Image 1: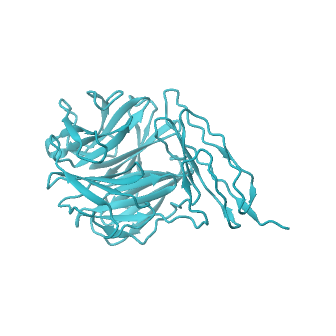
Image 2: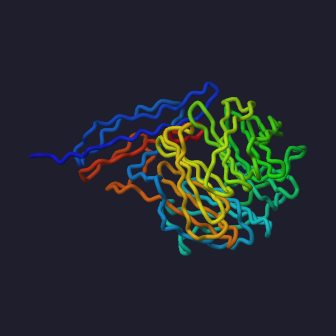
Image 3: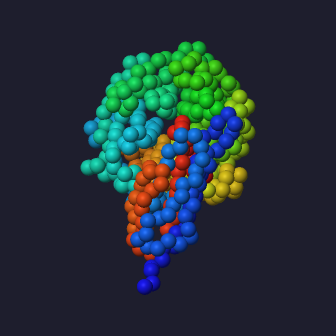
Length: 408
């Protein structure tokens, strides 16, 4: 009897955490080129590293272009009076939306268990709870990062040039506590914050619109420490410096910053020693101004999403950030797009904008690649089979003991 043959195209995705020795986690698996349909895939996971965890996605998505069936929604249980900056994170299998409503002095936490490839509508949007944070009731920018088992954050308020450390002692089940930092004289109308762990230390990168500067603070081994200022840099080409994102890639660290007074982005190439100021390269876009910005990676492709008025843009880089970028423009007719966030969960991705004119979110989930096996698992070696013939691709994500990883 002839057996139907399943051809498996293997897409390997490598994930890393930069360490003092600058070593990358080696994520790798082997599988025959062809496997019989219905047969358990004979996968051998040969990844190497300390304390690795795994994510397998047998129905991956394609970030080549988003699902243009956008969904405008508000959070269930809370209506914003001001909304122009937010964060997405995943925690304990929940997708978390974090945002400040500065007008009402509220910090909003919204949770959803719905897969991020599902469009949010009014009936299934994340359920929100609002809190007043003593010591940090207002903030126009913030970021969060997990330190051990505890989520921490840093929030700044530009009118007062103030900055506070946030501690989520109860996770995202209640209000964080805030501790105001003093003596940070480098702030001048802060517009964006990015927290990065590098070589065991926690760093905060802050953009200042007031003097077009980039500030780097080193908190050492914990955000509970008093930070030291590493440098205050005035990037060439900065013009209304606004949002910032930074992505470690194996052996290098790359960031991008936006300019509200021009259409140029700034590419920031960091040495692996953060004490050295980044090399800055202007990147020309077709936008007249750039606001929110978020970086993402899929396979060997890198993406920079950014907003400009009622338009969204994407810069695509093949293989690395030294390639010539390809720009794509999207227009959906929503006025005043401000911030943008990309949430990645293995190969499942969603990006969303905030519209600060009407104070709502616009989400655009990426569609899944057509497949017959909608399986996502964290097993070391998955047990699964494809029931139909065809050519399929699937990624492996391996994360080190610190739990931080990026695709390569």
